[in-house]
Length: 251
Picture 1 (cartoon, rainbow, N blue to C red):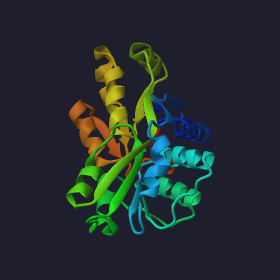
Picture 2: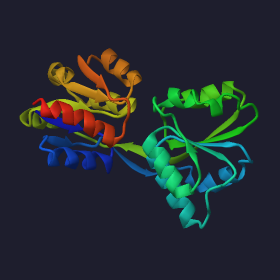
Picture 3: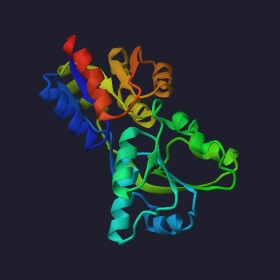
């Protein structure tokens, strides 16, 4: 059994190394690269528009890191008078470290739905909310908070660029390496990975055990044709390692 890890760097290689060190064969194959987003030059202006008790929502660790690097290069500090909210635990920890501020995050469901269920976001009428994210992605947070009469804006602090990969060559290699388990951490990555796989390999690929972070992506996997999938409940390497270690120990 081999596990294919498809998440972006550096998490992809970090998780692969952890699994291999635990005696579980894992293969790293990122599907995209992360670089600075086109909106970064406007980040400082957008932060200055936030007033006391407004909200800054951060979607991922990449959004934190690219934003922080840019602010440090401009000798600008994070604002101290706003409410910081992050989607996941790792993003919250990173955001708290770089800002020095308290960061709120969902405790159980670490996704858009979990974030929107936070009591702090129940009454946001006329509040300004700035969302730091990558290019594209789901619109649920923006749409829902707008419906709650908040003034919502985006700053794309990072940009995803899909790698040009040869699906047929990769599938031949993966079959030769006995890949039977897949790790995919976003709906966009799952769609791209599935698109890469040539038709003649789909029967095999759909039988692989797919690990995803949320029920939403599990539902997407089912609709695409995957037969065996499990929901981890988190996209963190810690949670993924725990789940994958269990199946690895079972052979």
